[in-house]
Amino acid sequence: MRKLSYPFVSSCVIGLLLALNAGLIIQNRDLKARFSPPPPEMQVKVDAIVPALEGLNPYGEKLAFPYGRDPRKTIVFVFSPTCSFCEENWPGWRQITERLDITTVRPVAVDISSSATLEFVASHGLADMPLIAKIEPKSLLSYRFRLTPQTILIDSHGRVEKVWSGVLTSEQVEEVAALVGRPAQSSHDRQSPGPRQRHRQRILRG
Image 1 (cartoon, rainbow, N blue to C red):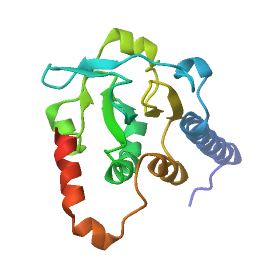
Image 2: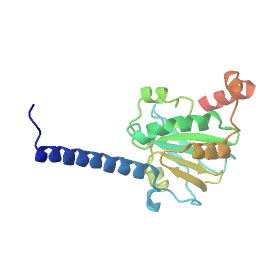
Image 3: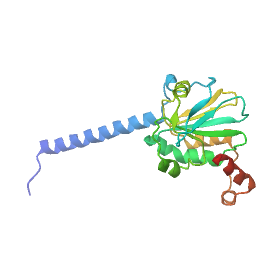
Image 4: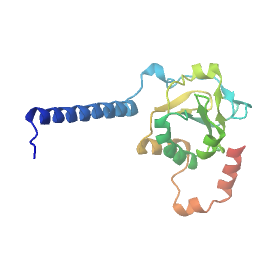
């Protein structure tokens, strides 16, 4: 059997170490992008007063969500269909919307890339929620919609209460759900929707 030379073995080891190092650099970059807070200019500021959120739904119909008339708060889910972090965030968003109290908070989803298809809408449970598929330029600037995913809570007067940028942790999901919804339901409650839950489903569908 032919013995491997020392230089050959060394080259293989060095190559392997370089590949592992490159993989770690990419992984660290992705983790940093996922968990590091964004620069302040990349998201709307807490306590900022924002104008009505406006745009078109997937059917080209105008949607507008002004403040002051509706006593409810507004929770905005900002996404793009091509965003991999958004895909990770959908399970958390679903947990929030399942517990959402629509008598006190109105949900709005915003696709900042204007690329959501009807198939995407159906597969991600967005058929039961108002969806701005094409955002008005004024709203795009006022809300600083530059990052995805984002979760934004706005009070009834248009004041930004809180912003969560990036993939929500389990603790953040609970935090958001506690601010906009009811306590977590038991499995029996989820399987047996009562009149209140059926009423909620009708309101979400409009």
